[in-house]
Image (tube, rainbow, N blue to C red; front, side, top):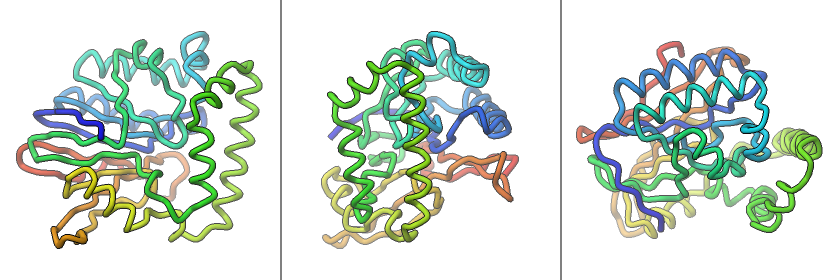
Amino acid sequence: MNKQALRGTVWIASDIHLGEAVPKTALAFYDFLELARRHADALILCGDLFDAWIGDDHALRDPPGWLAGAQAELRATAQAIPLWLAHGNRDFLMGRALADALGARLLDTPTVLHTDAGPILLAHGDEYCTDDLAYQRFRRIVRTPWIQKAFLALPLGVRRAIAARARARSRQARRTKTMAIMDVNPAAIGQALRAAGCQTLIHGHTHRPALHALTLDDGRAARRYVLPDWDFDHAAAPRGGWIEIDAAGIRASEHPQS
């Protein structure tokens, strides 16, 4: 199990889904980064920072305007406080080249964070959606190193086309699945907490922010915090938020514009 010690005030956010189509979400996120620079001792972006990621080269060679702006804001944050980037189901191809260019660090998840509030298991969350068998098969395939290497060797335009088709198929597949299938599996959550030796889990991915009280098989009480997704462009009610961790405990915070 991966481990990382982070002391002081730690902020965690996920599922921002930055891209060309969400300029208002980007601005709200940049406001959040400015808050983090002033009030946090470390920031973790726990997956799906970007709506899609087809390789670091498309960001480093000649990034479109929205991506250049995002990189500038992230770089400014990494210069002020430690910035950690974790992979999600949409941006799992983020690599060390991007992290180095931003001054950030990659965080392999699931990982146990040793914080002032105690040990916390942190994950993006899609690995626990084990009832969605089709997605888990897809996840295993695209996380295979040789497949990733072959994909990244393709011309940029081909990668863009493949990614666009994959997103379209994903949207179609979600229409045929129940909400329960796309949520985390309680047994998978319990198993992950036991294996990590933790009683607290923080994850994103499901876009269902909440605090769930759990009882593990051995009778111990546990907690599962679900991070919100961000949408200030298309949602009827703008939303976004994060979790703060310090010696006083764990708290969920909503974006001031939510």
